[in-house]
Length: 560
Ligand code: ADP
Image (cartoon, rainbow, N blue to C red; front, side, top):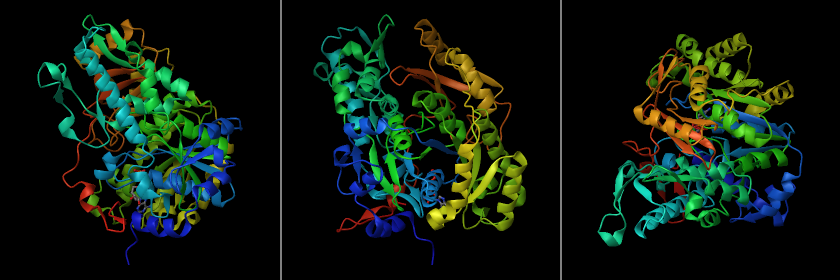
């Protein structure tokens, strides 16, 4: 019999083992006033609960990241969830902090973001679909702001906004390439001013980043007020505060700002909140979620999106300075399959042993280990075990890691839950006791070009950075407006360390192509778009949606 699908495992366990959310919150010392239940198994942590929790000491923080993703699968969320369960099972009070799934990948091809096998957060259907409505609130808030901007133009344009220089974009939480470039305001004088518009996916929006970086409602409002929305005809910046609508937009996000509490299949508390992608945004769950996980657990396990070159770097250079706590250990997830794929083995052949491809592909993991070592935090490699891995391959991968002097352990949690991850859990706990002296890769006071150069050469391995004419003009705008002292958030393909998705392994001596630079003054960083990365992805030829169904009892199938 074949191994059950993620949703089959989730449905059996949800039915048999899921605890009421009040029971989960009481494990954390939270009482009824501290949570706002959404049904029986989900809750928001209330303002009261947040205030109360923030008074506690911080536990230790473990950051889970990975090698570059491949079609062979890495299982970073699966390992983060399984690791938290395994730590809980060896007696360490552990709380997860994860991102919320977006409907884009759910309906597209990547799948959900609730883990897999016996390492999942539940209720998986709810979390992967509408959850507690945060994505919808963000979508509404972003589009409300867009409507207010267009209305301002229509009502006489007192601020002198140049419709060709509006940078605020509408969003949808789905991959919809047909809305990438469009025109709004058609239909004559009663239907506003015609102008070019571009939709992004909600998870790439600045409001998503702002929500994830805000500490409370006042901070959220201040950040929203500072968002740059357009330039005037004489090229002066226009901010949300000029429209005087920061109060209304903050109001729309009042509940979305509260972190969501759920549980794993093994009842480990999980705070799932905020969901920026790591290729086109900063890729980490909300600061509030990570802080709460540290306050409520002796250990917090959090995951940053895609490879360590994207989410890992952004967690360490953008988020960590705002957290007030640096990670105590970094776990890099790798699989034998993905490394062999990096080493040239074909997707269809990954089931067969290939020690040569593994040895060649190991250089991708080696680069990520070296990169994470820049930050002077203990690193552990977790080998996410697949059925098809042979003993020889696992043994070789261990030996290669030992050659690098990095701790390595197998995680067999997909098939066995916490039982398969206890050795890894012990190793990670030991790593958090080791000496660490967090060192940031760059200093905000450096120029934007210097910061991009540092990430490009140190993390990606580029020997040159080339700017489009548009990007060069935008660099000048940054300088003229004194917006040069912000961290940079590079948008880049997740598949390669370079900006070319086809260059697997450990590319070196290439040029990083910067095509656009967008100041996100509410989030407090500058987005640098490289290669052909898109902030509104498209759906694949056979979207995952084709396999999904629901019966008359409401039972869902095909959701992975
Ligand atoms: P990531 O976080 O790297 O995107 P996920 O943890 O979401 O990956 O896992 C993606 C898919 O791969 C899930 O459907 C999960 O069940 C599957 N998967 C992960 N680890 C394993 C494994 N060890 N064996 C089989 N399938 C796995």
